[in-house]
Image 1 (spheres, rainbow, N blue to C red):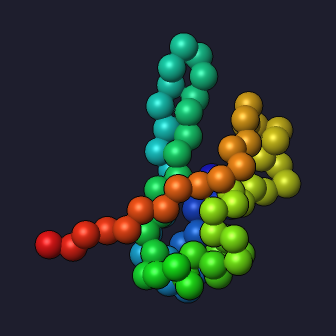
Image 2: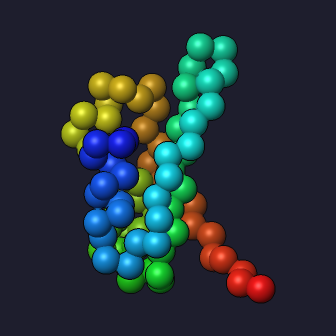
Length: 79
């Protein structure tokens, strides 16, 4: 993620930041990508028209046990 994924997120116009979160549980590492975007248009620049479809790289199946088909988006409430 440090060499491909995070730079890809961060180089997309409208990305405000990208982090790879992980935890280890019983010998398995669980990963979660946390990204912030200007708007849904910016997300489409990265992910394509269907922003609910997870984007994977060609090498991901070699490292991941499961490829989740969708992602969840949340809006930030600024206060």
